[in-house]
Image (tube, rainbow, N blue to C red):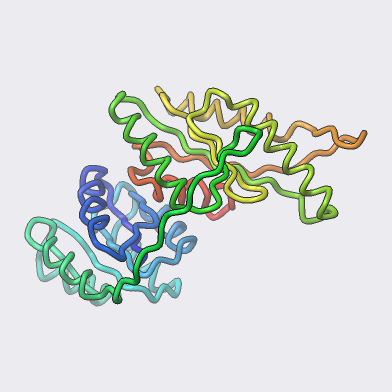
Length: 279
């Protein structure tokens, strides 16, 4: 069951994430602290369920709930709030919520109810191994190993009292090229990225034309934004191949730990959605 968290408090998001991670069959696919971002990311991820706080950093839980239902979202929505009154409960249920829980006294009921909604869990297979390419990039064809790497890097950043930046880069314009040329250009771009980002915590090739870069020891958002600009200039520079100059387009998204998200998938989802123009 894929769950999306909408909660303005990073501390409460951490608490919910720890509890949800302990539920077999539950996967948190994203997180947001405000209404506009929540609506965009829920459209992007299409989760099975949403845990929604009423008080958000911008907008409101009721506004988010209304936006979800009028936008056609059919999934399960549970409202979490410290404002446990019949008036709020009735308003949320009338706006399309499926459940209403008090943060102070109702979380155990929430997790019990979530557990009862889960299908029988099939045996989990072994996680895929990581393969190091000869150009130095880590070939992460699956989401799970990438999230494990982000989790380790975010824990290290937290211990060092610094931030972590997650970048997703997507090469564009390849579809108009012959397949063999597109493959050669993508490999050349991958080699350039790997060589130029030797100081990064990780450079991962997630698919043929999509890459992820982790930058550790980030001291300020301005530093992360400057590095994003550097990556953009690097990857948009022309490539020399077979005696000709080729230029590829690039879409780039960024997410900061812990300011933007505190979970690996939350960081990756936000960066990906930005790179694909979903925000």
